[in-house]
Amino acid sequence: MSKELFKNKKIEIVLENGMKIPSDKLIIAGPCAIEGYEQLLTTAKFIKAMGGNVLRGGAYKPRTSPFSFQGMKEEGINILKSVRKEVNIPVITELMDIRDLEKVYYAADIIQIGSRNMQNFPLLLEVGKQDKPVLLKRGMASTIKEWINAAEYVAIGGNTNLIMCERGIRTYNDYTRNTLDLAAVPIVKEETGLPVVVDPSHGTGIRSLVKPMSLASFAVGADGIMIEVHPQPEKALSDGEQSLNFNEFEELLDTIKKMGL
Ligand code: PEP
Ligand code: MN
Image (cartoon, rainbow, N blue to C red; front, side, top):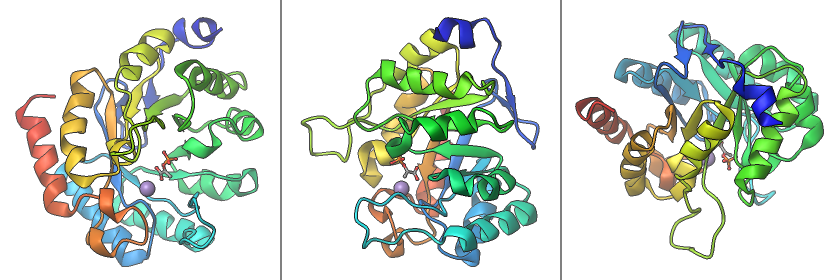
C-alpha cells in the first residue's frame, strides 16, 4: 500500500522560505515548549543566524504527568505567530487535539503529530485532508510497520507532504530516555520514499548525546534533525536536561558543516 501511496510520487515539500525537502538539509531547532515571547524570539533569532531553517516550539504539550507544565496553549500559539513573522522563519508546532486544528493550521508551516498521537487515527485522517506538511513522529512503542501505516492514514486523505521523524522507542535499556533506532532511517526512506528526520533530543534524553547522535543521523542518510535548544536549559519548564544551550547548538552546526554532512 505504501508503495502506491508514496513511491510513485516524487515527494517534495517546499516551505515558505523556499527550502525543498528532502533536497535541503532540514535543521529544526527550538525549545521543547514555548515559555514566553522573549524566550522564543531570542531562540528563533539565534537559530536562524546559525543556519537553522525551521523553528520548533510546543504550545500544547503532551506531558506524562497532568501536574507538569502543559504548555501555554492559545497564548503560545499567538507568540509563535508573532515570532514567525518577526524573524521570518518557518515554524513547526504540535497538534494534539482536532479541536485545535484551525489555530495550529494558521500558526504553523509544518504540523507536528507527536509520538503519543501516532495512532490517533481520527487526528491522522483530519491532517490528511489539510494542505500543510505534516511531521509524523514515531510512536514510542511502535514498530516501523505501524509507523508507516500511520503515515498511510495521513496520505489516504490526499496529503502526502509527510516528513517522518524517528524519536526513539522504549526498550529494556533505561540508561537513555529512549533507544534511538537509526536503522529506521534507511528502512523508512526505502519503504516509502518519504523524507526522514531524527530527533536525538527525545531519542536520548541526554544533552551530551545530542551531538554524536545528530552526526550519526546524517551519516545514515537522514534528511534532517530536530533539536531542542533553550537559552537557559537549566531553567527550562520542560526537557531542560536534553536541551542544548546556544553555544552547544552553534558547535553542533559547525561540526555538521565541517564534516560536510
Ligand atoms: C516534542 O517533540 O515536542 C515531543 C513531545 O516529542 P515526542 O512526541 O516525540 O515525545
Ligand atoms: Mn520535549
